[in-house]
Structures are given as structure tokens and as C-alpha cells.
Length: 238
Image (cartoon, rainbow, N blue to C red; front, side, top):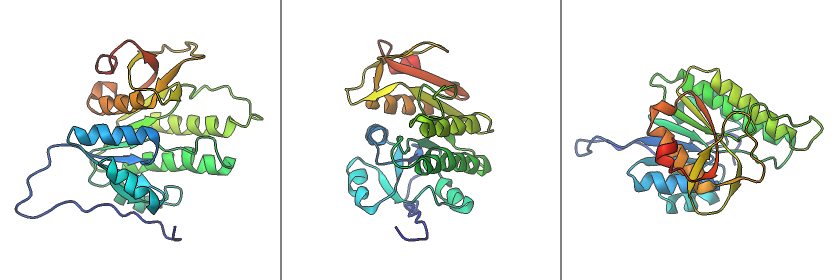
């Protein structure tokens, strides 16, 4: 990666023979992750255009094979004007990035807190305020993880990003899935506030479907939705 971040956003089609786009143009942050993979395949199959932000050039082929347009950028180093350029012309943004508790605490905070809050600030500056879905985790914001626990930086960073999002003026939805699995998508069960969720999981594919469902329904705006696998069809639950 060069010292200057790249934001190779695909140009919008233009010219007299181009018909107006009726489907949404969606920006996915963390475009090479498993949830993003399912989201990209699902959204593009429904006619949406997906621009997927990835860190490395060697991830571009995967994104293209899923139907998305790869955008190479290091979200930890983008300046406000670069965020604005990245967000511009998108109808919606999905955050599915994260250090996953791997690497140093500094790495975790740089992605899960700082980059996410910078994105939210950029959305707030956007004149057309794209819809925003943030994939977080069920334990946020009141995670209760001790500060001497190795998981604390991740939990703390996620909680900070979630608070920043909830205190913003943008049209946000935060998804709080439980432990993620690679099982096929199923229905969901919405968890009530304070409900225990030990030994429950949710499919990554289900999370992707939930994210797209939220983009299709503004009634989910302003809500933090905690959920696990369950019997309720996603279209009904969201």
C-alpha cells in the first residue's frame, strides 16, 4: 500500500445512452469479509450496485467474482475529504469491517473505533445523508468486559463507535448479532434488552440478509437490533 491512500472509486456511467439507475448504489466497508461476501452476492442479485472497500489489490478478484466493484483504500488513514469522496454518490453504506480482536489494541481501535467514527462523521457531512447500517455485536454498548481482558479493546472500540453512531444525526441502524457461524441462512429471533444469549449463534449469511432488509425498510432506522438464529423469517423480523 502506498503512503497516500487510494480510493479507486469506480466512475459513474455517463452519456446520452445511459438509462437512469433505479437500484441503490451501496458502499460496503470491509468488503472482503464473510458477511460482506454474502451481502454483495445478495444485493447484486437484486439489482443493486455494490462498491466494496478492501485493503489489498489481491482481494479485488474475489470481490469481482461476488458481483461487487473493488475499491482499494486503507480506512485507517483516510482524511475527511477522502471519506467524503468515498461516500459521495452512494445511497447507502454498510459497515462490516473490523479487526476482529486480532493484532494489537492499536490496530483494533484504529479500525473498529476511529475509522468507523470517521465514516459516521462523513455521512453527517453528506448533503444527501445516505442510509447507514452498522454491523456491530450483541454485547455493545454495555459489554462489561474487564479492562485487563484481551478482548477489552475490541469491546471498548465497538461500544465507542456504536455510541458515536447513535448520537449522530444520520439515518442509522445498528445490528447486534451474537456469535457468528458459517451455517446456511435461516430465520432469526430478536433478543430483548438484557436477555442472555449464551450458546446462541447466528449465520453470517443471515446477518447479510438482515443488513439488506434494514436498508429496504426505514422503520428500522434509529434502532439497535440484537438477534440470533431463530424461527422468524427475516422479512418479518426486520
